Length: 149
View 1: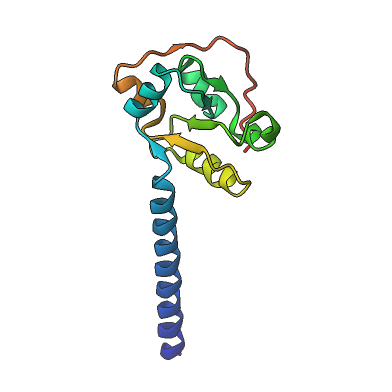
View 2: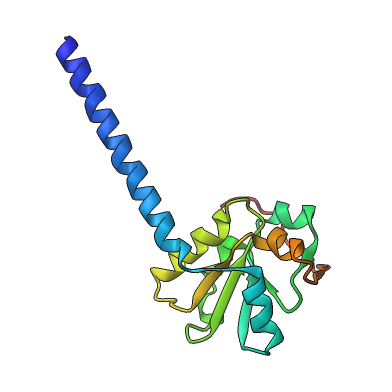
């Protein structure tokens, strides 16, 4: 009986360790696709053709009704449904307000699986952008508060 419990515990520890290592490896790999606020600001100031997508959850947008100038608002659940509207040959930067950029990272991972090779996420999200003193503008467009993911 004790042997079975010890084996089960050992197996559990191994599975947990494997999953944790897998998660850390995926996070490191996706980190290469991050862009700092300064770098994005420089690209936009140069007039580069960068599509900036605000992919915040509806409640986050309600709490902070502002957007990076020139950004296009698209709800996270619609980003991958509207792939025809997102050019694969154009540089795309997504941002959110999650502390760990979790929404942006999730969008990026799914988009990479659909052969979007020019997509990056804004490190620090909207808060990182504002912390650098870069402009935001009020977001006054109507949006749906559907919180289903």
